[in-house]
Amino acid sequence: MQFSERMAHIKPSATLTINAKALELKSQGVDVTSLAIGEPNFPTPAHVCDAAKQAIDEGFTRYTAVPGIPPLREAIAGYFKRAYGVDVAPDCTIASNGGKQSLYNLFAALLNDGDEVLIPSPYWVSYPDMVYLNGGVPVAVKAPASQGFKVTVEQLEAALTPKAKILVFNSPSNPTGACYSVSERDAIVKWALDRGLFIIADEIYDQLVSSPTSRRASSSGGSSTRTASPSSTALPRASP
Ligand SMILES: Cc1ncc(COP(=O)(O)O)c(C=O)c1O
Image (cartoon, rainbow, N blue to C red; front, side):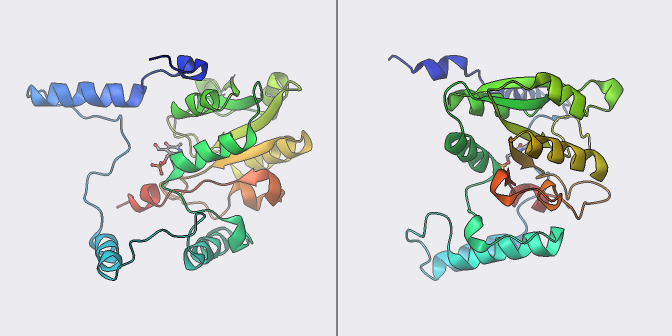
């Protein structure tokens, strides 16, 4: 079987590799605390399971509109207004099977071959692979521990080339936990929009910190046509 050239860049998931190793050690009786996969240590809450079962029992099992049923898209828009004060029209929302699918779809929709994607590093391991799979080139911008694992506008500027198209902004960060302050984030959003970049603001962990934020990158006066805000119901709901 001849795989596509794009597949040549794709490495096995480091997270799944570590998780498999942890499971193997556990099966040998070793006491292991695995920090690999971000899965909660409790079952899905009963009201979520009940709602899913009720929907199936009521025959809600057919094809739906691809971007999501209208009441769901209205609920998503309502959530953004309630939680972050951001006005999002329901038809500017899309329901998907999680943050990962939304991110993949975004890269697929935006990238042409050779387009560069600025990714502050350390980063969540899936970003570069998703970029490669869609013909893009990930450009890591180092955010060292001495800077609290946060990049500055100056570092982003230094990494910018005419091929840059997207900035991935992940705060709170996986894996470092770094959280940008509102002023740091506003400066980065302003810089990216001034440079004509599209911002993928991956803030899916914003409710998993001791002081959950009430603002997102899309609250920073960003143009809604150039800021995408993938969200995940699974991860915030994992918060006990
Ligand atoms: C930073 C970040 N973004 C997105 C995702 C994907 O979230 P989901 O589980 O909803 O696909 C993850 C999951 O690990 C993540 O760590």
